[in-house]
Length: 95
Picture 1 (cartoon, rainbow, N blue to C red):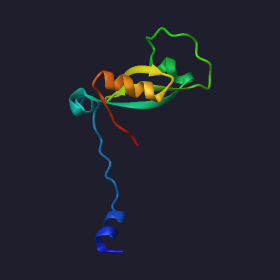
Picture 2 (cartoon, one colour):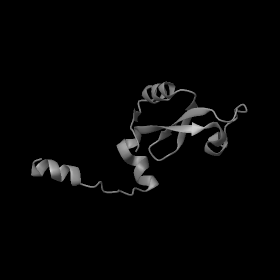
Picture 3 (cartoon, rainbow, N blue to C red):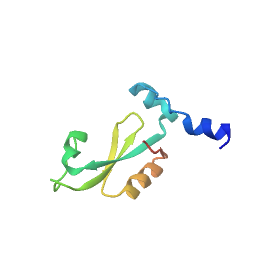
Picture 4 (cartoon, rainbow, N blue to C red):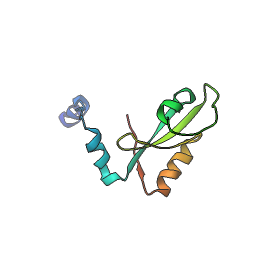
């Protein structure tokens, strides 16, 4: 293995801490992410929402702004991404 390849493989990722305000301005407000949510956690995530009772154990998908503000809830990842696209938001993957 060459030294360049070894250096890349041994590199550690630096953790970057960003405030909610910095995240809100990330991508000029045009970045969002999709998060898997359990039906049991929906009320805590969307406390003001009027929604029917959800059966426990369901997997749902929430679209969030970059700062974590929930935008919408759906039963498919594809619908969440489509909603982001219709609002001209770019979805990013979080790890």
